[in-house]
Image (cartoon, rainbow, N blue to C red; front, side):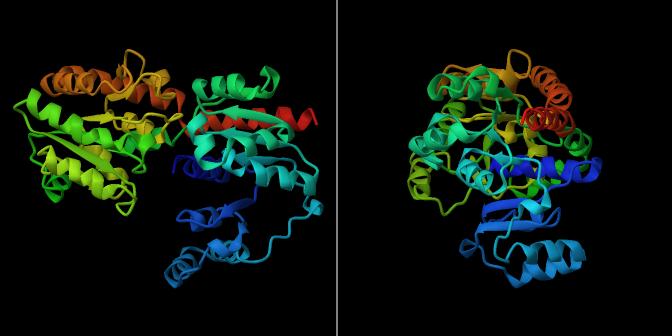
Length: 378
């Protein structure tokens, strides 16, 4: 998901650019990115039982480098964090880790900065409103990943202005922008059995209600009615084993769009074949997939009042659609499919904006400044 990916981008950047910042990583539990964190720094697991070490991962880490292997092995040992190591701060990445951060604060007697990537439904679904109410007071400073996230923390959780800041989520935008032309679009389309004259709309994320994946079959049906030009929908990432996938495919077949809607594993290369990116989410704080699409020069469509992405899209990087108006989405997709010049202009504006405002280097400076202020005030 986006939150751990943001942290990984940040730590990779700090590792490569700054000798002044040293860090260790505490994961609440293991997961698919665990070995990538371990390749950067000593990595510990709070819930060790949830992580299993597979032989292929160990073999890969041994091949990668010795320190990565040692860091990963370190992550399997019992957690022994000591104040003798003289940590300066705990940087808690997402509301989900806030209870762990507060527990570590008690042990280490150092301040906590919390980077929030969730809106209200996300907080309730992945952590719990009561739990957040119990721990928020112990956090020294909170960063919201979009203006809408900050507004939610202020209005619904009473976080005071002096304890709250805004730093937008980020990606290695310059790197993605520079490599966007490296992919063979024709070859990738052939691999996916997508005609070269087709208009391809991308979406991405977990296959759940918040992401609005259930809206895709309806939008595919409407665009099929609007345009004689074939319009394909590509959902990138998300587990096909998710509950409800069979119901989703039922709609796809009943609406007669099974040949126009494809679900594939996540890979950055798929963003290269898109003509537009559709964020169908009902609630999404500031999704990285939109920033990735923007770095590839793709116009973005999103719903108003559904998260922070309208703050990025505005009037110049795509279209902000009234909440869940699928007919309007189909209209705008048809407009883009019919007007190559328009989508090129919007896409280039999106690329310029993401590189200028949402690259990891820019955000890392802001985060380090916020951390420095908190350390000096404690």
